[in-house]
Length: 135
Image (cartoon, rainbow, N blue to C red; front, side, top):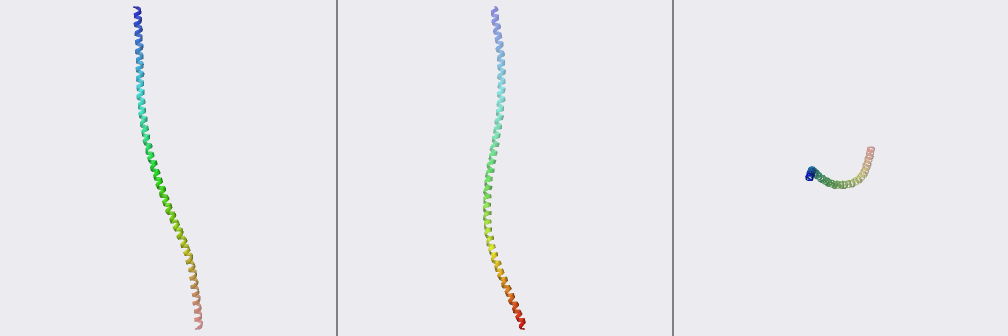
């Protein structure tokens, strides 16, 4: 009877320890579940941040592409304007040289005509003197 009581006591103690271990394991399982939920929420939050950042990166890339295209368009326009300016400058230089050449010719013509006018004046003055002397 003492042995049966000892065996029952040992069985009871084992049952109490098993129950305590079960409670401990259950508590650890609940803690692990809570941690898993917390990690799942963190992962969802991080995924949302990643998605937002990817969206922002896509917008920035679109902006950079638009800027690059605008730069290329403006560069082309600048080259076109420069080419037009160069052509106008060349035309103006040619016109200037031509006008300077004409100016030199006209100045020479003016000097020649002024000399003719002076000769005619002198001739008229001489004729006037001769006409005045013969009267």
